[in-house]
Image: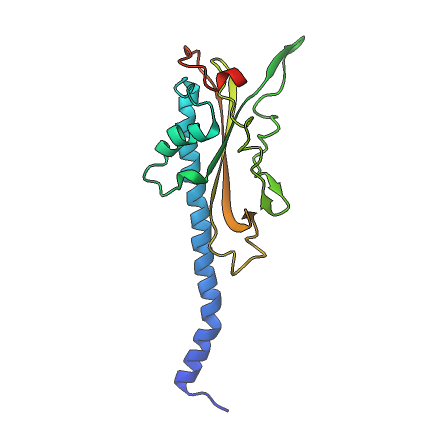
Length: 196
């Protein structure tokens, strides 16, 4: 059976359309992931400055810090404020007999640059707990970690590639971390600092 010119064109389109549209969707998915990473990095850097100079000492909880500082830094960046999960912790550095020893930014347990996963599911229990926010006093080394959980577009089509889930739904999750040494500010409140 021979195909006419129109039939051959339709067949060629059908053969090439599926890989082409998957490629276009894949480019969109990767672009969205890169956008989320850059926007999260910038928002966290701007919000972390409030910890560094002592402006956020009144924020005693992770939710308060996200609402008062991170959300203000995301204005105009198409990020949903409620999708941020932040952990602020002090890094202990001890002086040993031969100088400084102990933990620093390079070997802090949570500074490994990877998302907290349990299988293929995102585990944010260490981010949303009562001990996840240690708004440290002046002169402290502080590691601030933020995870932004956004939607995933291709997970339904390619679940074997995009298989990261949170609360049973496929997501894009990006991690951003900032290490700072807080300045010697005068504490304006006791919120958060007393629990460290």
